[in-house]
Image (cartoon, rainbow, N blue to C red; front, side, top):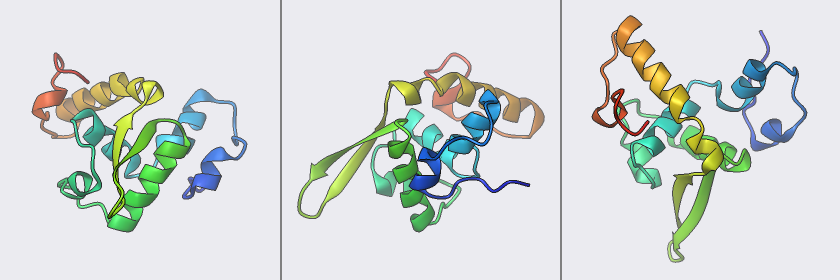
Length: 127
């Protein structure tokens, strides 16, 4: 099985395949990335808010995934404090295009995997 990219450099290198599913998985196909996108859809913006998610993503992995999403143009980062340096994250237009996929995964997870729908990701919600 091919390894998924784990660094920002890996995201920016040429794709292994022209298959659109493979290309998408190169960017968002690991265990944590779509959970970070889900949190952005739910309104989280700051590192501590992502840390508080129930999946308990390790901080080093969270920092890496945020960097990868910024490098891929899915998320923007803007500094809101200089001392100490603090950053807020937001979905870009490219990231917003992931909303239908997040919604479809929520619906599939509720129907087939025993998940519960987060209030803001209901079928009529903003996702």
